[in-house]
Image (tube, rainbow, N blue to C red):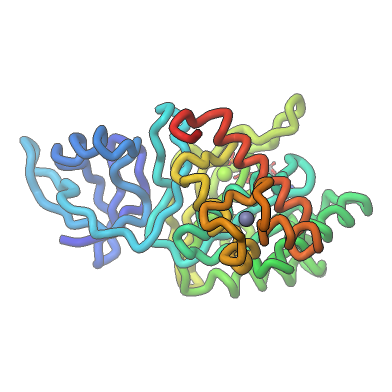
Length: 318
Ligand SMILES: Nc1nc2c(ncn2[C@@H]2O[C@H](COP(=O)(O)OP(=O)(O)OP(=O)(O)O)[C@@H](O)[C@H]2O)c(=O)[nH]1
Ligand SMILES: [Mg+2]
Ligand SMILES: [Zn+2]
């Protein structure tokens, strides 16, 4: 029997069969061996297409095989240092939920996230939530950040999960639904940006658990603890995920980073050296593009910070 993993807690999995029923399964022993080899803290992820087999002492369903993934999003495992965790697989798109305030999402975080979605060519929409909380200054800041990403080619949307029925943001919620229709969307972002609340607004019967952000730290409470796929009444499905603190860059080689910066990709073949890292090398077309304003200061600075992060944290890179 075949199915799709809709929830994974690490020890058992919910698999939705073709007929639509959800079956609780464990993993066949063989995958546990692969786990140590692959350095993935989870060998099976939400969105994986799997084949089930009956077996074991209790003759229960077990995941026997995983189909090759079309794409996936990983982060460094919060539990096992050095390992990576596959957040979800086989996605049509990612909705990266960002907030200018309460909590703040930095462009540094957005850029690191985009590296991962670019690496697998997963279309990403940046959704700015909590419009109702923004003052004029915050709105100006938001317009700047949004224009930055739009100019590179990422669609952006302004929404409020608690939008009033007659507000502009409510129209944008309808737009969001339109974007999600008939697709498998991953919802990602920091804890507390309102991922689960937003999905409840899109489809109230989801009843996802939400929690106020901390009054002390201004950050989210890590309310959603497991990625879970939910079917949408208007077609498609959504994968709500736990908040991500930081994005690792471990999966990339330093020279790959600029290839996943889409505005750098266009010019980097003009660099004098083909192993150029676009820092201070002579004849660097990327730096030239930055100096002439074709690449934004913010994006370029974030790029240089990623390079610094490599030098500080990854010994294999000299
Ligand atoms: N004012 C306002 N509050 C919002 C909005 N969206 C979410 N919130 C609030 O923000 C808090 C956090 O929302 P959650 O939906 O739990 O956030 P999350 O992103 O799912 O967080 P994790 O599950 O921890 O990753 C809750 O108190 C929500 O009511 C919004 O558009 N406006
Ligand atoms: Mg949540
Ligand atoms: Zn260069």
